[in-house]
Amino acid sequence: MTQTTGQGGEPAAGVPAHGAADQHPRWAAMASSAPAGWPVGRLLSAAARRVERDWNAHLASWDLNHASQPVLVILLRGPRTQAELAALCDVTEQTMSRVIGRLERSGYLTRSAHATDRRKQQISITEAGRTAVLAASDPEAAEAMVTEGLTDAQVAQLRELLLLVARRG
Image 1 (cartoon, rainbow, N blue to C red):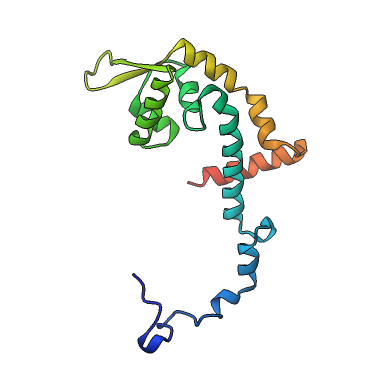
Image 2: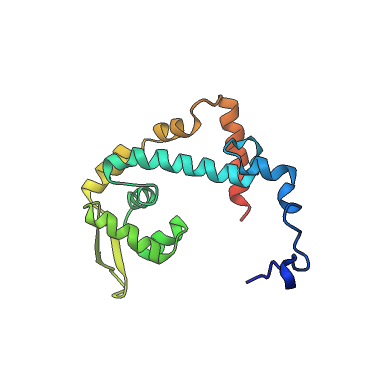
């Protein structure tokens, strides 16, 4: 834990006195409910949460969400192990285990013994899962949800910028 006050209540060395740091011109804008003054990271995070909420609301009609829908899309190509699904979705195996459990309870996938490795299970999509994901995953509806109100040029620019940010890691 960092000490913020020294002996007698004065600021510790290196910690600005109250009123100095919190008076920076950007702090008020950053704390505002109006996003114009927010840093890019906060804007991107807020936009991502809005898109996630909208997408989850759309997917809820099929008892899916932003985490489970990509799993079913991947399984359309054929069975996978939990580890493969986790790697493809860029999540931990523990997280994938929860997603798989939810999809299994919904009747959208099944687990079976792996053909060559008794320690692993093969995850496969069911016909109900196939029907749900094909109905829920209309790419045009998803794109329209995210880009509503933007021109074609703005959508292209947004895509290019997001690709730059996403590839940085």
